[in-house]
Length: 260
Length: 111
Image (cartoon, rainbow over all chains, first blue to last red; front, side, top):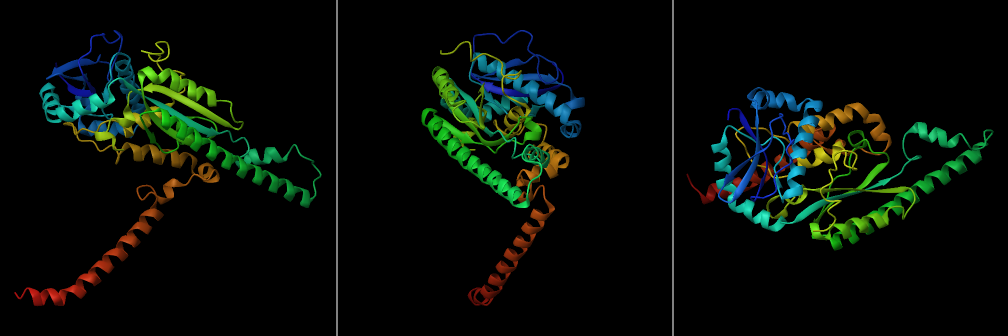
């Protein structure tokens, strides 16, 4: 087996085979490397793309990065169906199998601890958005002014403007209250939770402004209930949108002893 | 096992997860292991992504009150300048303190 080794995840041995057509970051199907009761899931990747210098260059290319990130996530996703993987960060590359074995040997105890901690758990992502038809761009602002009375006095204009600003503020307060209540409820149910930075709409392509971006660690067996809890909050309040993603591998909780 | 219909369902395609969700996890979360190929993700691609986004939509983002990069020394020259100024002041202060200590030290440790 020539080429470099791109490692996706570490997990315990599992019985169910991975889906047959699964391909990794460079088109090579993921393989399993066993070492002392642990498995590294890896693919062969070519030096011309994954050696230090070309890799760095590729990372500047958002399209390449996107494709690689999706392929990486695709493998993690497939693993999540059959086992509890510890996902490694994108771009963990070794020269050969023995390099991977050395890594498994050195980090083995920590891996086993984390695998025990996360066994049978998945991560759910919950985001809250304010649907900002009016709080968005200046073009929207102009639109919202237009339908009102066309021949408007200066005083009326100011009054309308004040009302608009006030209602926007109220909406923000409501959203914040809603988001923290939701987070409290969900963290109470989940085993662990993490708050991430709100997402940039340019990258997410989502409408509205992201005010809560949280991850929850939930046992698989409790996931149905968790999903129901989130679903129930949808449509509870107008002007807000609750978005659920998952189940993810426990990315946000895989750090040593859950620090992050 | 609960929800067999829900759990194995791939969420990459149309399932609510977007590119930001994926990048957030595969680049920023997950276990960090130094492989044989040295890459410093924080230095390189997160920065690249952030910068691209900013370049693309700085005015719009500002309008929406998103200005976190202004305080991020990696991204903003102003923030970097502020930080340098702060660091500079701190260092001066430390030097002053050390200089004040110096005579005492000299007494304690005759060379």
